[in-house]
Image (cartoon, rainbow, N blue to C red; front, side):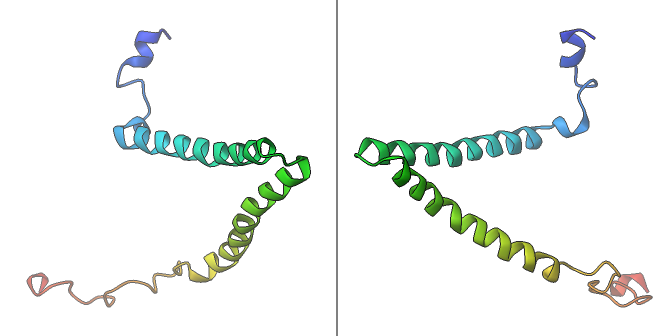
Amino acid sequence: MTAADLASPSARPSRAGRNYRLLTAAAIITGLGTNGALIAAAFAVLGSGGDGGDAGLVAAARTAPLVLFLLIGGGRGPAAAPSRDGGGQHHCEGAPMSADAE
């Protein structure tokens, strides 16, 4: 396959639409910003006269809330998920959805 074949719309997967590209770009930029801030904080501590232990404390202080909330959210997520048996439907079985359906 040549580069021209890959550039044609029919060769790209269906997920390669505009929204997918925007979402991917946003996720990459967010990840770079999050990780870049952690590195910048470490260099700020080192630049202000701190040592490696101080930089480690700053990194731990930034990471601890993330770990804590991930643990809480990971435990609460399945409990809040909708059931798979169809119990969350907003209409009765066999009842018409509107007056026009009679």
